[in-house]
Length: 293
Image (tube, rainbow, N blue to C red; front, side, top):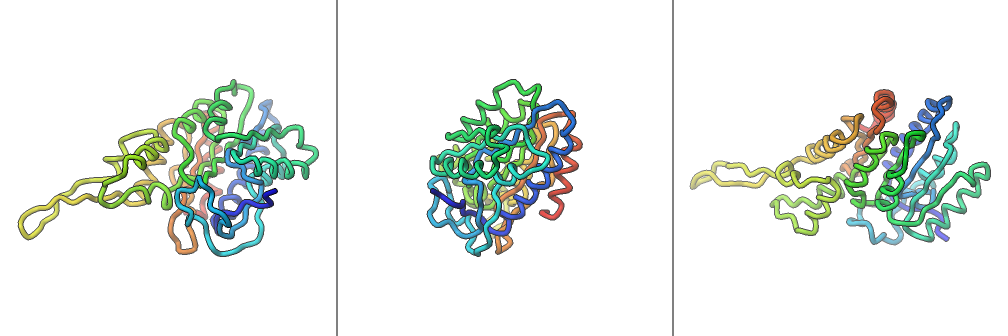
């Protein structure tokens, strides 16, 4: 049985501390309401995370070097953090495509006997499972969804489905530096397969003109056209604007998760689907993200 889920560096601990803080604030704020509170984790892994390098590259990783090399102590993963949260959630949904990690999650849940009957472990592809889950009636429920993919697995149609619930607060790691940016060559000649993957992630084709611009520059024999690629900041801002197009509340300056060489890997994004609850949710998220900018 898999005993831990190896991935990430110091930024892994940072994102999980933000999640821990938000879950506590969330369940406290909704403690005296009639809403049924759910925690949803679509890439739940084993419930554990370590900050050592991947012992065996996952086939879903587009870039295996996404992982850090410096070792750290075992860290509580998002599933464990959610189960530890007090006040507690009414229901926990853990989604994981690998059977061995589902088994590890079941073992983890046994450590929380008072929550065992309230945990739903779903083996399957995250986008399919989430879209089915979001299609239910959410009027009497509220939820926090943590989307922590290895790379570019999350599809825009899944994000849209979350927004349409008008009930879910979304924490999402957007693969900035080691995902989208690395699929964008400076020449602008993006392979068709990569274009389709970016289309699925961003839910739009306009990125082609947003991320590339043809400019004229002086040369010895007259002006020459040069392809200019957007900065990594511009790429991140484009995704934030995409979130804002479907969610009533979005943190405009997400957290930036960097590796030991200070290179941006992910944006830690937050969006709230419920218009009434969005303002306070955004204030809490912005406070928790203040040290990641």
